[in-house]
Amino acid sequence: MKIAEYISFTIDRLPRGYVFTYADFVTDVNQKEAVIKALNRMVAAGKIAKLSKGKYYKPENTPFGALQPPQEQIVKDLLDENGKITGYLTGYSIYNRLGLTTQVSNTIQIGKNQIRPAFKREHYTISFIKQKNIISKKNIPFFQILDAIRYIKKIPDASIEASIKRLIAIIRKFTDREINTLVRLALKYPPATRALLGAILEQIQKDKAAELLFKSLNPITKYKLAGAAQVLTNTGKWNIV
Image (cartoon, rainbow, N blue to C red; front, side, top):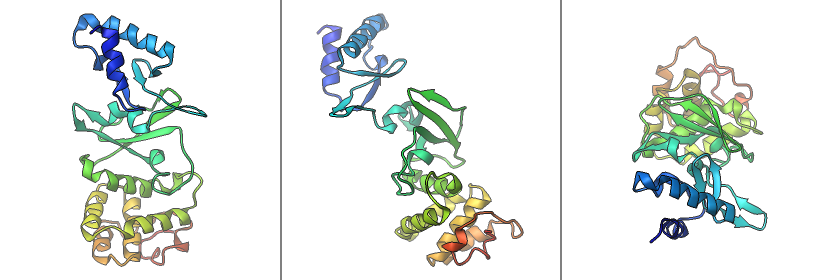
């Protein structure tokens, strides 16, 4: 089978929105130029689309035009290295999914242990949030909640009151085991995050978990979060003003 035929056959079997590079088709270093030429011909023919330098995807066409790949696909090289999870979508990338805002951002935020400066990829801005905990697949949903609490003031088109109400609704559904995990991971987050999470947990009567967070805080430090008292009845105890 010729290289062009092999590439075409393989792409036909890929799901729409899947991002790939020429390296996914190169089995011999001498094939690199031929593979790149074949991919560029497919771009010209409209069979695939180019995402950025060296990155292509199989577009999903709609009456309104071709859809961009899912954000996970656009940045998958930043989320996984050699089969190991090294990052996760967070912040602006997941506020909409969590029901915290109706806004959809063109900024993709990624949580990682080692961060780098923000950069552009196509029409997206890729930025990073430092995660001090070890990143694992099972902990990603907890990180996303904790990041939303940490950056609650930056959630677009959402009030503090509405955001806290939504976070309460989400956390209220957690099992005791999940809440224990959330608290354990929160201990590596800034004090303001721990204070707000603790107040939320106490509000939903998870007093034992809240107490662990309370003991981790400096009793004289105050945390400015205007509007929190409209939802939480215990802001005084947690020094949230």
